[in-house]
Length: 205
Length: 313
Image 1 (cartoon, each protein chain N blue to C red):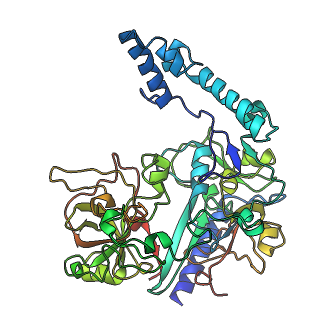
Image 2: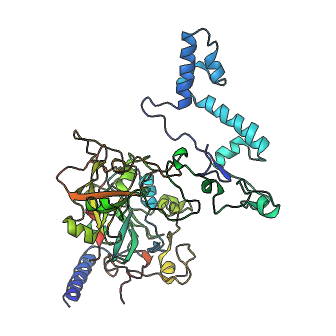
Image 3: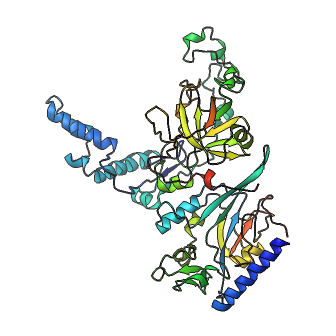
């Protein structure tokens, strides 16, 4: 029950902060990512494509592929969880920004950073802008285009979550979920990402 | 210009991406320049430079682009378009980046042998499961192999394995797969790729416990041939008794001849397999914790996943 108490405490703390700072933007469409945890081979081409687009030196990675593994030899398992900025419906980074550089786009729900206002204080530590220029040009983000297994894709998050959006990341019989193990409770910030979970990465309930 | 490895049915255009770094030159530039300089030294080699590289100006060593383009265009128009039935022009190909051949019917291996009864290029003219050539050998010392090769495909005892008496001193079977984050040793110095992976030795958790090493500890891997230093990655996903060290890391020798970069070349046997491949996966080694430093390359760019890996137990 201790965990429940903590979670409740965290929730009220977040509610308090939200209430005192801002009303989250409700976008026309909320774009989000879908990632297949099982079929992903962990090649990290998405990470590197992202770094290529954003001109990042070795060090910061806006997108990160986490390798999760466990079990006991010979009964073992492994899967990948791939995340970047999740463009949350209620972004926790936004109200922490001291200069107001972070904003949520009303058209597609992308959480963007105005680099002319950003002072690099790292209070947000969110950076992916979902390649907004690519999206506005009618293309997909670099990380999605670099995925050789087609397990990472982008689309309207409500349709992705419902499994109604046509995407190669979704195989027959796959059901997207909002949470897998090794990830914070999505109720906190309502992130715009869904996963196809590994059987060992499934969260109950 | 490139064909996919190994000789597929399409051409890929590989344009110049960056200017050559430092004083690097292509082989063709170097040999052309040598031809011109030899010609200047020896009058017998009249017009050697021009004969060696007829499309090049004397300044080819400094400015090769126009000449290279002329060779490629001539090859595309004179060979590819003329003899391989390609209709896409060189300029369109450059714009498109890829040319895929259109085949009238699917290419099926050995169609002629199966449908038209053509003979296979074996002594019997058939697919040989039993090699009649190998079966006839009486003196193996007179062959390119030097030792017996079975005339039918079957398991043979590797040079070194866990069946060997050497296991007493070297209890781990080392395998050295192709790394996923470089091509053999190529691209090991690319920062972005190095960031995704640092050289490490993979061990089963029960073996690691016996050796008293934890995830991220620096270990020495050695046998009678050499010694290398590398961080250890402890996992249940490796078979007990097996150690994994990816090939192709750039060596970094210290004064005592110990490789600090974790290159398995220092552990392998200098004996090719009968087909001429490196015996990379039949190596016995021992492992111990060490105080020696691991040097992950010529500069530190990566963090080993063994340092950051998340586990569920």
